[in-house]
Amino acid sequence: MRRYRIVLLATAVVVMLGAGVTTLLLRGGPEPERRSVAVPKLDGSLYDDGGQAAAWVRANPDDPNAGVIEEKIASVPQAVWITGGDDPAKAKTQVTRTVTAAGTAGEVPALVAYAIPDRDCGGAAAGGSPDGTAYRAWVDAVAAGLGPEPSIVVLEPDALAQIDCLNQAKRDERNELLTYAARTITEKAPKAQVYYDAGNSKWKPAAEMASRLAAAGANDYGSGISLNVSNFRPTGDEVGYGKRILDGLAVDGKKIVVDTSRNGAGAAADNEWCDPAGRKIGRTPTLDTGDEDVTAFLWVKRPGEADGCAANAGTFVPDLATALAEGA
Image (tube, rainbow, N blue to C red):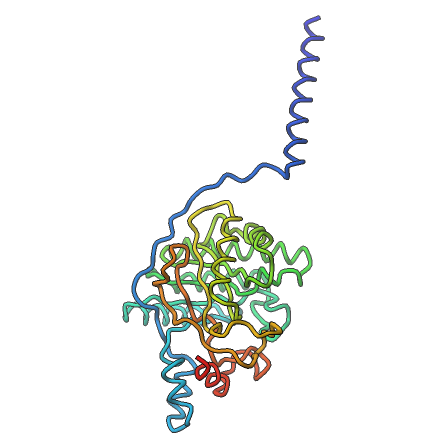
């Protein structure tokens, strides 16, 4: 008799547990427990390394466009892109040189880590590390070069927004590599603020982008998200979109950085992204954004450097720079 009761009790427990599991499955599983992080506010000025625009002005001082390019572009702080992917030593040297110069000037550098395998899905900016092993070595070098001073690192523009071009195995690898990059930089350079790139407000719905970010480790690593890199969406649209994405993550307190380098006139009417006419430079880069959720407005894409239509991607084109500057 007791054995019969025990069997009935065990059966009841199994039924109850099964009902509970069924309920969780019907509801989409348990919600991840929300937590909070504190992202330190960055003070001071952003670092300016001059870049190709400044080099062109020095080489062409008598050109009629030199003055406007110098005043409105070449003298404005812009992000330093760390690319390649197959030469860790070169990457470390470039990063170290940048952060050392910024530290000497008492300024905060913005850098872009851009070497994920299968970068740009074979598009105009194709390249990157040849495989995951090479990418991890490259990330290790970048992290080592960042050192102990504060910096902003925009992590792999378009890598998540474009992930659809990969098969499932490569998607899984990309998520793992982005997690590795954010974790490694955070551990080796704790004052570096890492911002996962989240595309722009006209690319993927906020809920979908939040899900992609979570799969790539953004709940556990990084300081927040970057938006509008190399695009033209209005700043207000991007900030609102970014806040919706952050609401979809399982962690509070993360921040946003927005690329304002070419969004002064908004996007082209047809949403053309490749060197469209009629654009102009946007809000000057600053760490004083007036919004506690926004760490910085940055010039991530360097104005005047082609997207791949006016010239090879990354090539400085004086006519592009002049048009952007004179339109402002």
